[in-house]
Image (tube, rainbow, N blue to C red; front, side):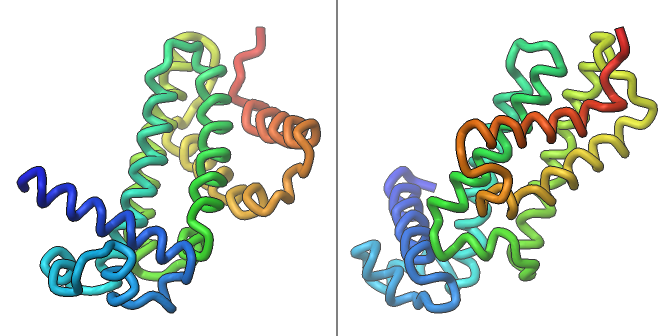
Length: 198
């Protein structure tokens, strides 16, 4: 792919994301995306078959950005318990920021439509793999005592997934102080039973 082709594709994807955020995927047309990108419909159809393909790519890009943030946390030079806390904070805050920034698109991040479920499935597997790395580091460092890393990683992942909507809607603290308190409750719940007694 040439640099010009790559730039045009990126411009079209970004224009689509903005239109989806403003109008929602269902109410957006290919004409809306072409107009927002200031490119013709012919150019748009050179890169994408239809609106559904573009919406999948937009969601993939958003999930890829989220994953990059989580992978960066895993690579930090921190003890595993601090790394897991940082992972949880980063994940909740990054999801909230992504969903808030995407306006009307936000519903699609949580509905089980075929496209979103497909994109999230790949993301979920990668996220679970990062959690396992952190847990295994914690075992090696003598911080965590875990008998089944795979199951523990799945439980943490699904717990965080279950917190997405309430966290984004502000049900887990409206003020900075109450937010810290709710985050601490989450930490205590997750660490109870995996943190090595000293």
